[in-house]
Length: 349
Image: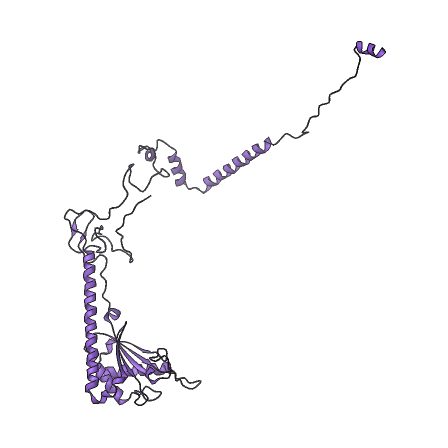
């Protein structure tokens, strides 16, 4: 009853609610964002100071003019661009202007450069010269073979004479024989029969215009150990003795292109390095395209060209290597180097 009385009087249990605040003295991460913005701004500021320091007065003035809408270089174009950093291009102004060069340029008279035709003529002339030279070589070969047969002293050497064509020209080889050697053993002293053969060769090749290369060859039989005289000296001395013999029989000295000693480096019979046929003298009538090449005419040579204004130049002031190309006038300096102007189209991006 006492308890019920207390409840009726408003008494009872008391409840206390306690609130706990989290975080303590920290204020979150918002400050990091502000600090990052500050560092970025400072970096941009220092970059600006550095650019201002390294830029020249002309560059600073150009940048200033770019941002000035009243500047003449900006205001003179309808698009608003112009001047340094003004968005100019290498193409002509206009939205649909073509920047492709035509393959050929028109010409009121209908004339075009004759460069290709001239080149074709040159090639034909070269080919004709080669054919004529080959005919001369064949005639010389037949004359030598006939002379060997007709001269009794040389008839026995018919097998020791080899005549053939090489990429360098007509090659006439005198090969040695153990029974009838061309030179004294180990020396450049020429035998009498060898001198007679050299004289016959000289009389047949002297009328030809070709220069000659004289080359000496030996077998692989060498001198004793420590010898100062080797197959190199021997082959060179024999080649030089053959050159002297040619000149004694009337061959012009100025037509001797070279005298070479090859030692035992180019055997006629590689399977037997000691074969006597490896000892030989080679006379090579050199092709004229090797010793006297036909000079190519300069790019500003003999062609009938077309000038930039469409008029034909009849005085040969053309390039001659591409049809319809613009040609330099007489007052312009000649082109430098070996480059050639291409006829293809050039298109800028």
